[in-house]
Amino acid sequence: MAETRTQSDRGQTPGDPAADGQVACVHCGTRFRPTADRCEFCCAGCEYVYRLITGQKLDRFYQLRDRRTGPVRSTVFQPRDYRWL
View 1 (cartoon, rainbow, N blue to C red):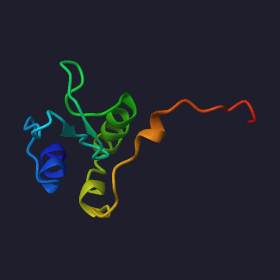
View 2 (cartoon, one colour; view 1 turned 90 degrees about the vertical axis):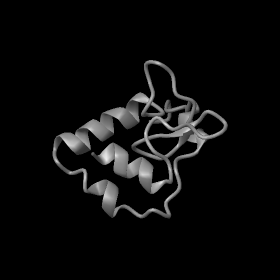
View 3 (cartoon, one colour; view 1 turned 120 degrees about the horizontal axis):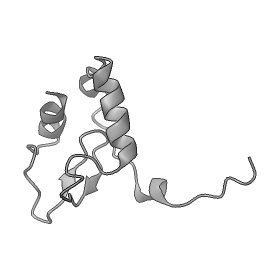
View 4 (cartoon, helix red, strand yellow; view 1 turned 180 degrees about the horizontal axis):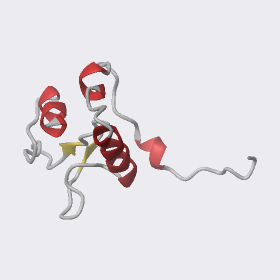
């Protein structure tokens, strides 16, 4: 349910790639190129959080969140140095 609403809100239906072959992540909206084993989520983190939210019946989050909030940028996926911690 939430998957369809989330992607529809972005003007895209599930399994309907844009002209460039990319789809929006069901959780965060980041555009990515789907693969056979990862077709709804851009990363394992988004899949985990999505399952956590929907598993606890908190999927209304996807209706209430600010639609103006943009998806995460690729800098989130870059390695970071946490040695200072």
